[in-house]
Amino acid sequence: MYEDNEWTLKKKIILGIAIFIVLTFLITSFFGRRGIVEIFKYKDEIAQLEKEVTFLKKEKKKLEVEVKELEKNSMAVEPIARKDLWYKKKGEIVIVFKGKESNSEK
Image (cartoon, rainbow, N blue to C red; front, side):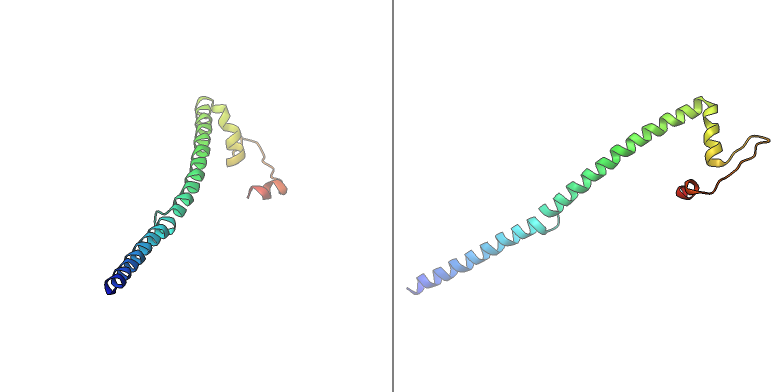
């Protein structure tokens, strides 16, 4: 009878250790480093970065087309230089109006 009690105590200890190990494994697999929660968080971040990459690739293509156009056509540079760099032709007078448009660009 003493041996049965000792064996059940050993079983309880082994069962307790096994449960502790399984619970520790489950908790770390969900919330630990590289756990399921973190993986889902990174999936969202990756999706957002992929959208940003797609947008930037489109923007790059648009700018490449614009650069090629400016390299081919020297007259295409003039409107940009006049607007952005305030260039003027000899004898021209530039009039600047302060208003909503000039404040919104700042």
